[in-house]
Amino acid sequence: MKNDRYTYRVTWSEEDQEYVGSCAEFPSLSWLDQSPEVTLKGIRRVVAKVIQEMQKSGESVPEPIASRQYSGKFMVRVPPDVHRNLAIQAAEAGVSINRLVSSKLVL
Image (cartoon, rainbow, N blue to C red):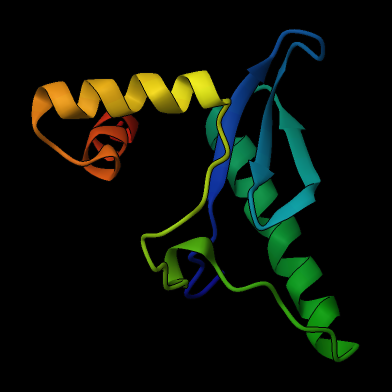
């Protein structure tokens, strides 16, 4: 598919004894195969076909995650004792809670 910027994943399924291909932007779609390479090609073909059908019927097509703009902000609720512990750790490190938590989130 031309300009395919969707988010794909190929994983092994012990239950199916095959590789499973999925697309984050189309969570209801999947493809099974014995080869990871064929699995990726299969899920990409399925997504392309669904996109064509959506466009023909006038439905809006999901924007690829990679193309979306993010503010860098999100809110997380934590129990009060976790918040307190984070505040203590941040104070001891001489940084803000935001800086402390964002450093813990970096993968």
